[in-house]
Image 1: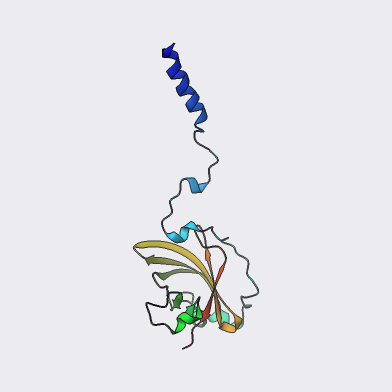
Image 2: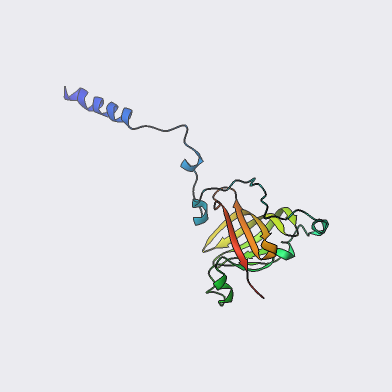
Length: 169
């Protein structure tokens, strides 16, 4: 009798274990490389909002290898950070011709997808805190150039728009 009890118990456990689920999504097998990738992805084809100005004749002259000049400068999530010295300005984003600099990371412009005088969609290669990752971003000017609206795109991107205030000077 004992000889049949052990195999029967093993079969019962195997039947209840659940096995593998063929319908598991990409989350089941993918790894998360950076903290930013833990957030829900934003749609890659986010519709344009009324914050992005309509293209003008000046937009045709935008250099497709750099970030538009109107977008460059110092921006902060918290306007109080604008007056802080470097290293203590935790929410500042510095936009240069081909770079984005955050408090603890740096993004190098790799490829421009769309570019106008007050708008860019581009791929950046980021590094920071010992990690490296790629991110597509959309940057738009709003409020007459006083606000920078950042939207991260693709897998692992932060959902929603992030709004920065232009720092003086």
